[in-house]
Image (cartoon, rainbow over all chains, first blue to last red; front, side, top):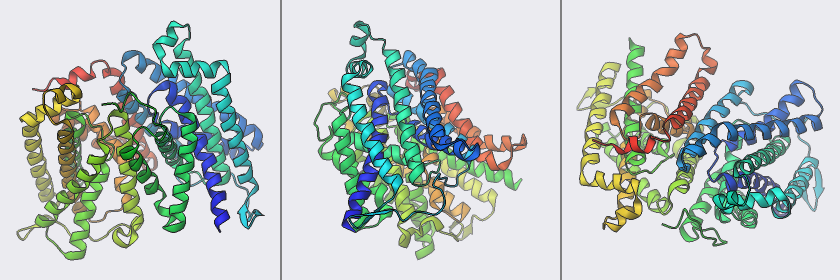
Length: 292
Length: 290
């Protein structure tokens, strides 16, 4: 039983840190809490479901096209709405409200098109899976863990060593100064929304491959990702990974010792504990927002 | 006719909700996404007290407000350590936790099954059973809350709130206790939100957690934003408009299966349009308080 917890932790950790990274990418440059990102996560799963089940497209092609479409969607939303808002005013509060509006629209469109019941791509019966050190793990869960770890490492390298990743970090630390140095911050922000939305789509696909997907699933995972980002210290990539690990471990322990239905509440209690005693995340990096 | 009265009762409930949120969101700049949570706490407190102990309305209403207030004080002393965006995220978390308590604490709230059979309101032996008398009761509360909020917003305390929503540090430098003012305004706002909760529980006579979700919070917040944050009259108009909108859609022949979704899509779209049209003039427009 104890090893099963470790596998559960690994599984949820990989999905939540993937969601967290996808959000981190857009938050780092966009500088606002894009709540509509949760609908992007859900859409990644739903598009794959739609292509695969309704049109009978083979799974790899539907996954690929879903990633592309969702990435483009995130990019278009940024281009048509938030780019103009950013031009008009610098208040992030307006952007969060607009993002709430987009979230409401997208989530309701999803439930009009696909219904509120849960969808899954899983074929046939639930497999028992492979027995590994006395714990059960299905093939698809192994795939999820491997894919997530690869993507986490890749995005770390992307931010550190590629041209675009370096530009994103420049825009994130000081937008005006990077404009002076010839980086077009609008382009970089657009790119980060494209990449972030594509990553979110992958997370959504992994979720729908393993478990069920309802229109509100994306919101739950985004909430976990945001909590992981806040407790890791906002704007800190390694802190985010550690935050996701802490969050998932605490949730699974609470599910094991208390009840699995209190997992949302556990996430929130951890968020409170961190905001009260470690408001800057455990990395301690200072934030402009919290300095009052 | 009955149906029109029913709509008017709902309009009065939403006017109460959005005006009480306006005290926190409009005056002191605390954009809260937890308002449906406090609405639900009020409804559940009154429903449980009435069903389990048979307490009358005149006792359950103050108790519901008190309980909401205590919860809000506890929650706000913690969450007001953060500002701006972080505060919105925290209130989102409060909403999630309140919903999860209503949904999962099955021995107390019966979880998703909800609480059926809540008796109608009775004051001094007079039952508010038919819709006209209930509407009058609702309008009475709208009047009281409107009057109180108007007075609060014009009092010295209201001016502190307006000042701190514009410049927190400057207000602090004038010797005002900003933190305390924020906690008080958040708590008052939550206590006023208990009133429509109690009314709703006794009017529908059945409550379950799905009435108090995050979507409800967004809906209330959008009424406040569309109404211009601080203008009580415009907020009342906006509440009436957004409640009547799905009915108008029904007359246009929208199938009822997607009517609920279309209602939300339309208010989401209105929200974006409002933000777009006013993001430049938004702050000046909410600053002019007469």
